[in-house]
Picture 1 (cartoon, rainbow, N blue to C red):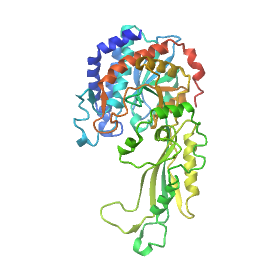
Picture 2 (picture 1 turned 45 degrees about the vertical axis):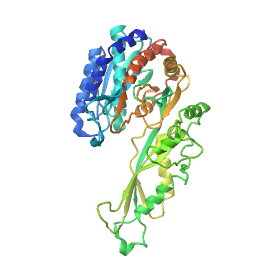
Picture 3 (picture 1 turned 90 degrees about the vertical axis):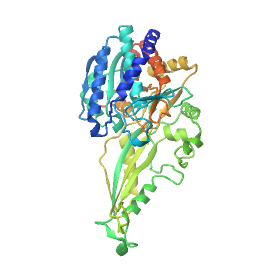
Length: 470
């Protein structure tokens, strides 16, 4: 079944590439209201494509932000129901002057398709869409039941996705999630992305006086809010970079030998890792760079400010200072608890009389992981092994794909990331690209995976589903 569908897709590869280029011409930047028309046009493109391919109940799911595009095919009774996830929004193209060709005018050079969103993640999303359409065209049906969920807010942290799921729990009920987002972790080693780190965040305001003061009149005699905040955030780590927040990772799931072996295989050149951004090594020396950036939690100050930051000089002692802090989390860590531990630590180290205020909780995402033996993982490893001639290394991404943890929490289902992007394709940067070879690989890989999943009954997923948080 999958071979006939794959052959059909590859025969249509040029037409699919044309559709991908048309999709890439639509400037779907979710974070900037100036691109509202591009977002609307992209939704319309996807709605029309899903309908043309024969999907049913095609519609928008609105949670008060950028709507998600939904479509379904439920003609495989007794077979698993899979939510197919992708996202249609992209990052801003700035800085424009660093692009060789315009970001929303796709260009092919040396076997690469250059455009904003080509790798992240319109290329892989369209592969998934076209694969379902090919099954319907060639076989008259899919091996599994499918529910498309194409999000419009991934690049802004999925702020309304919980409201969408809450409003459409029954519509989105499924056995598992197959994500077109979350690409391959190596250009040379076959990999499967089986999870992502979670995220919690907070903003801190420190107040040490009722107003700013003249440094000639008060300097040397009063606390400076900027100095105090700098000292305070420095207590989050020791000199080597180990996290010093008590109990911060006490609930983290211990690493397994398999976790560390996979990380070692994907370690790469650590010297090159630091040389690229001209950065200096830092972090817990008990773990490799790959382990620190994918398997272990981290805490980072993303911005800090206070006092006068304009042109020239102003001899002032700041009464207030501010910092934005985020933490990447690993399986087992509760995002709310992790945030509270950071708050408790900062309060415990705050000097007497100095006041701290924290932004309200919210916007946190749990980590996710696909457990060993899960039907998604078993099927995907078989597909990659057959294509690559060897078993894939399991990889976790160091960033946060909010839907993985949120679908797990709210719907009780796990996610496998099966995207075809490569790690060197300059996502979020100028000259983002997608390898044309990956397009054909995806047009063969997705049919093979869906066919494998269709060999199982829906009941085989039951032991892996969890009680959702209502």
